Image 1 (cartoon, rainbow, N blue to C red):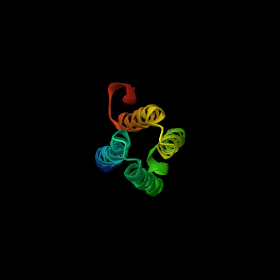
Image 2: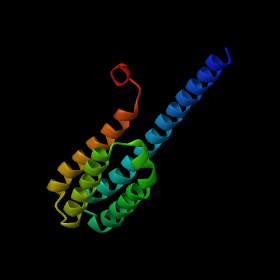
Image 3: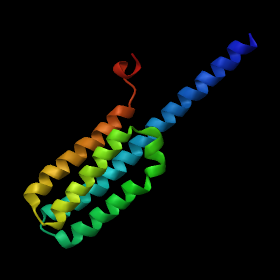
Image 4: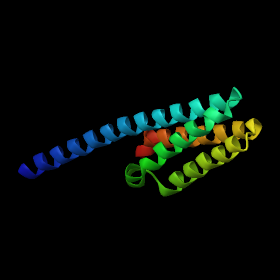
Length: 126
């Protein structure tokens, strides 16, 4: 009986950890999306001088999460998201809003994908 109770406690703790991770990763992704959107909106309004440091700060924020992301996220997803950040940076620094629109959409899709992968769904369980 003691083994079953210990196993139940471990499963409950594991499930609680998963729920905390889902909440934390969701908050992180929303914060990253806000950072990127602010830079993109500045660029869209023609204020590239403001967009550049905003995007640099957004990239720095993403890179600072390395300790967390490399534990809880797939490396292929981390790589594609990092590439999308730098593609957007390239387009904003070139002051090419047309290309930046596509890069921004790609980056937002990558960030949304990261959040979706962390959510619990029937498909993620079975």
